[in-house]
Image (cartoon, protein in one colour):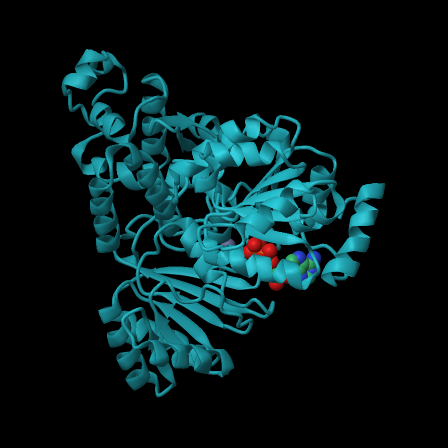
Length: 520
Ligand code: ADP
Ligand code: ZN
């Protein structure tokens, strides 16, 4: 909490108890609420469960006029509506699922509503703008704000209509909220919604009681059964397909003798609900599920989350592993991955529309960076969410046992030089061609075949360039721009000057060079 809360915040604290029945704010809630009460536009990035709704619901009860909340999920909106009304807040929704439009509009115009929830597709309709003009508006809250960005994982064109709508009400502050914005998406949300950079508030993403481990998948049944033997508490195993869910559930039950149940959309609804209820009650059950499982499930004592395959993104990984250890006690997150997971993911990128591929690729590269790092997993995760964590956490596989590593500093210098000398606007493929001396049309046309870095990487070393590029991206020494070019960042200069070493993880069998712990 800030050292000396202003009078507005003191009043907010009163409302917190009186209206919501909570003793104290959590995390960044007071910072966000203070800005909102002050009429300043804000982007709050807070992990799921951190209490985003309160940051507009509470001001809505204090400010004159209505807080207009844009939210993409009608089902979610009605949940929120029920919760708000239960706290005695005057709230309403305007969606295709509502029948009481007229009353809602009358109450809104009369200034009787604290909160009005609308779906984003309303925003593009002229009638809605007219309605807003006839009512007192205190705040625009934009939930799931990453939907406004093509960089986000869930772009929705309707969100682009919010800006012109809100611009028509220039004096009304904006509060954008999201749980899952990486640095790119975040910057884009600020631009798209015209929120000043100083308005960005990011909550701490660290879940220090979760021990992260990421391993090659050689025998998933044996690997997960081993985990289940050392960890007797409840666990969730995520598998990519229904068939794999069923298979794994059977084999894990047979291998360990523990209660194991499947959960996926293909199960009979009664069976599925039964399995879920049994899991929530149980102190030793393991549920094998497709990713849909876990949303809205309140089970604080999940002791492990295992991924039998690569998750969709770092955001997804963070969210799924975040279901472990919500009670604050020690918990484990174990991901098993294979090279084929990446191949399949790359293939899928080829199938998405052209204009989305760069961002999808960036997302996958970030995940690869997490998987391939020899450094601290937590540090990679937290840096992805814009934090500046300590170099080592002491509670992940790499911190606890240093992996086999190969010193590739010299090659990394060559790669960084190539990025620098080509103007920091080309992607990895181009840099690879320049370094290996593959003079295709684009290389020659740009004169890159005349650079000193042209052809300086031999065939035997070329295969290391890709893992090095990922490692450099993971540590922020190379940063992908929104156009897919690679720019120098972070400690790139120190690497070029020979002040910092670069290492990549190698499987033990191939760790023919020296084995050692942390890099220099
Ligand atoms: P998010 O939208 O960030 O995922 P919610 O707004 O749904 O999170 O809040 C998650 C839960 O935390 C809700 O049950 C909410 O009532 C509760 N909560 C929010 N703020 C506080 C607080 N200051 N103290 C206690 N509980 C809180
Ligand atoms: Zn660590």
